[in-house]
Image 1: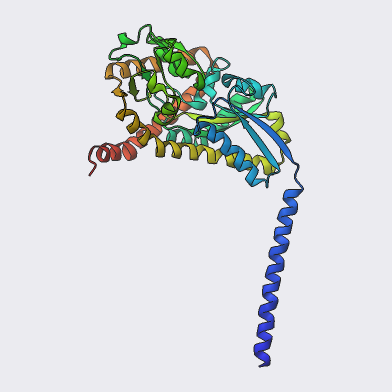
Image 2 (image 1 turned 60 degrees about the horizontal axis):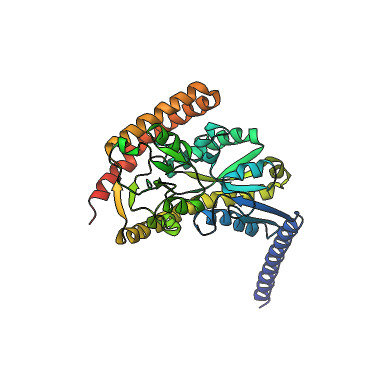
Length: 368
């Protein structure tokens, strides 16, 4: 009897000690969190709020940062135009109008053409390949070095996957059909289209529909079925082309003013990086889940799906790499990044031709 009582006492004592330890641990964690400063940031973006996928990625970063810091570090996202126009995010971050922004680096190739690699370039990397380059191929370090000239640090925070090839008011069958066409298309895709005779324009997403509807544009690209349907682009143009060869895996990013970044406690920096990582993965998954149904809805309406001809694709690819070589001969920074990026592309293309392409070619064409 005494032995049983002794055992019970030991058990109770051990449980009490464990509970006390857990309580102390919780208290310590709470105290650690509470000892960190309360910080409030603003995040401007290049997107309208109606695009719940892209603007949603910015919101994800803000929500996750708040959750991981027990609400002590809060970031408020703003849509394009609320603080600055959608294509002026980098300037706002650099000038500390805001502490951070969500945008695409290829909007700013006029400042440094090599910034295009941070988003995507024609006939470049798919989303999976882009993430491999960013996280394990030196891409993140490359972009950090580039952005240091602007006193900015950036992190991937979204990807659409391979995009569609844009909306056209008339069919495009040959390279000659592109001549004189007024088209909204940013980045190096716009540069290549210009070399093919297109009159290129760059507009924020929220302005595309009106320009297309009123005849200021003959064609425009945005992202893909889900977002294009939300913007109503199918109401302004009939023909929907694929693939979006100029954006095979575009990365969106959060840009942070480096001075503001360096002020953050290490815990907040780590929370921010984790939040950006989650947004990067989540956006791609969301698009893959939503685009199929949206495309079916478009086709059920008056949209006519068209593929780019081999003539156009081959001409575009030829012009793209000729353009890269020209840029490399003119700009030492571009050349350095391009040569390393090209090696990575060649290696991962060979691997994915074995594992990804062979699987896709069979299964996509032999569905039961």
